[in-house]
Length: 193
Image (cartoon, rainbow, N blue to C red; front, side, top):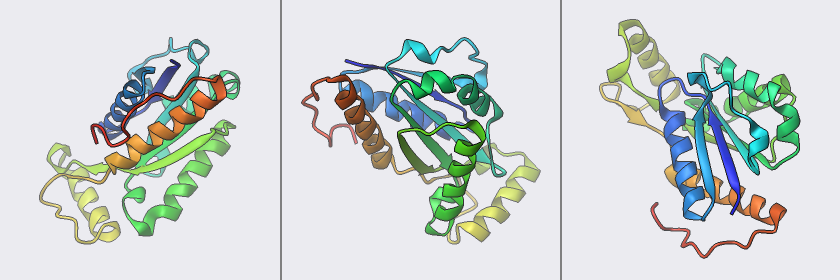
């Protein structure tokens, strides 16, 4: 069994949902996984206490959460000494038209922090029209119509591929198991998905 830290930042909760799915998948494989919301002020998180670290961030107005950037920058030495992964949640990843832009966000994050994770994944985010204030709802409807044609802007929409999130966690777990000489568990890959 390996210990995993899943440190993430979230703006509207979708990255937290992805982190929870990753933690559940790692747990299904027999590992000890802990999710920590870095944007909620978890300054006392110490990456050296874990065998592997996954970092997640959402993109809003082209930027990742400052708290996540700071965490990775501050913990870069600890991150470079263990297996790591980065997952990004954005609307850009919700459509084929935005894949290149989403990749640019990841490249920018890695460049800004000086971190080179072992694994990277990009997941579509969500539109929570029911939770937005008037101006945000109006702006997000305009963005959705331009970037995600056909999306019903009268209701909330989720674009995360949950199978891909679980597959990503399985891939990271297998990588860590290989690095630490841990026998792969006998888990049905289709369980719970």
